[in-house]
Image 1 (tube, rainbow, N blue to C red):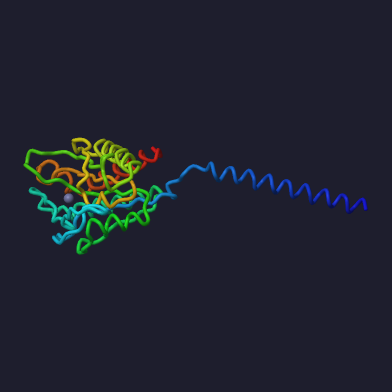
Image 2 (image 1 turned 90 degrees about the vertical axis):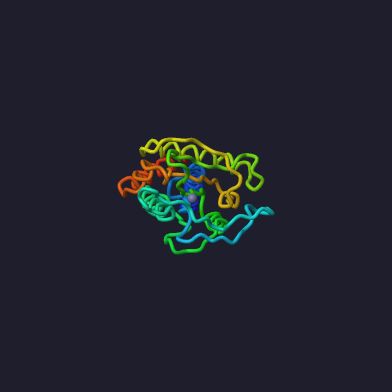
Length: 245
Ligand SMILES: [Zn+2]
């Protein structure tokens, strides 16, 4: 009888130690900080080799229709089309983000595709935590610098919380981008007329990386070395948004 009692006591002790361990690890798991590997970053390299001029709703339930994908601008000095520049930077950004531990989804990895802005948003909605839309500007030759476009809190298509996070994401990306490159910071701009933004269900930022119609911006962005710097700077912006910096 004495041995049985001892065994019983031992078993009870083992069980309580086990319960305690499970309890502790349970607490540890819930307090575990989010890691880069828990996050999937969506990248949409703007445009494609040919625009698609049929139309789609500008946002969910909208009666306003806009063309599916615009042709985009091109480098007046470099001769590079916008769709090639956005894909080149997107590929370097993907590589940089993956090296830092993030997961990455791209809307396209080739130029010869036909994916509308709405379809691009929907693809990223499915798998990603945030969406980065890469573009470059075109205007008069004197216009220069980078800007970030975000949905305002009055945007009728997106949840207010998503709009607020989008502004924060836009601000972090633009600040890091202009710090890590020699492109001038123009600033943030609220835009509620962008199809690819309005169909987003996740925080979204559209970065206008510079003006392809400006000699200095265009020459800078055309260089491989600088495209890598642009990608690294944007990855710094993602780190800053999540507080990994
Ligand atoms: Zn564009």
